[in-house]
Length: 266
Image (tube, rainbow, N blue to C red):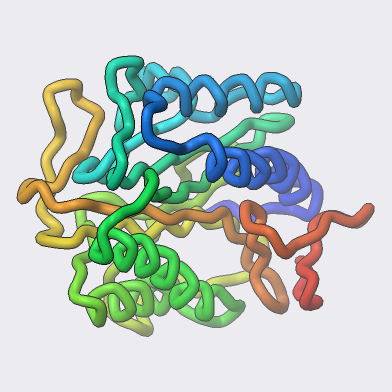
């Protein structure tokens, strides 16, 4: 069942998103060759707790960390480790969220570690571009798979593939809610988008095949062919106007709740 959120509820989700958004700026400076993936997780957990919130991922379904930190061919759900040291040329995806007054945020970015290959840079750029291609259809009256189709078209035009086994989702009182938001699909299909829907839209793409497998730790998802993968995600609110990107710079909160700088408001 798709739950439509009230202005107050969206304001609470925005509170969690504020912290999520702020952490990405710090991660861009933190992520350099020589740090461990555990260093990243420690930064995320400390930041969230210091602001009086709870990490959304820690303990969720038994996940042992506050952030999913996935390197190179790891698509999602990488478990941070002191032994996993980032090296020049790696790419690392950080998926994180916070809980504020019982409401969740969820977002992800993929970062370069030092100088990376042109292929990896194009992969990172395409994951982000895919998100924004889909965002154009995050408007009242569009169909959910209009978003999915736009993401797929953008990614495949660059010669990359869209992961099929894992998708975006609704977000609110729970980290994962209806509706599922695939990154591929046929335009004109899926639920109609209406104000109050809150979606975690998250292109997960690979340089090679979209086939994946789960490692023995029962969490980490990797590409079967060992090709690198990238992940880009934001928490998005459908409004009467332009969508709100709660986990991305460019929105402001007002006394009446979150409001897009370009005028779109719930």
